[in-house]
Length: 155
Image (tube, rainbow, N blue to C red; front, side, top):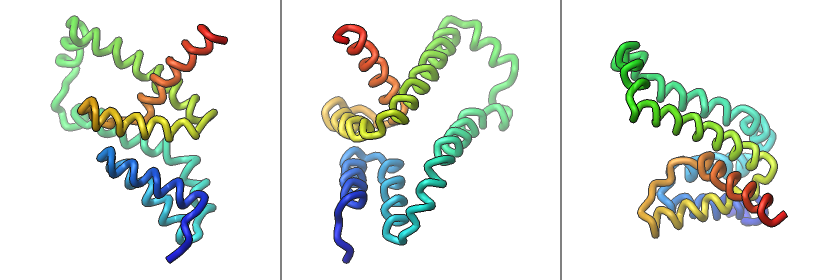
């Protein structure tokens, strides 16, 4: 058995938090990084870090666009939805969400240690608010808004 310290300990804590929060994505990511660390493939972590977010976003967009590719949503239905009040509000919400996600991404790039707070907050949300841990990027986006407000109010 290898001694647990430094990066391994942090990743193990994150893995346990992911298990407690029922976040399979977080558990999988922490487990993969632990495996790479155990196999002494830490150089590969840098390569993954540089491209994983882009690759993840590609898969996310494929998931979102799949109904168009399967023909489940056509141009007529798309236009009808967008010009309805709920559809227009959905468009507005999506524009706002993408901006928040960008702010969250920039925040996490500047201060990656905030991810721990996001993980803890996700677990608290699941346990006490019966929420669903859908995405650290949106949580980071909200944190970005809160931090910007704090800085404007209190310097």
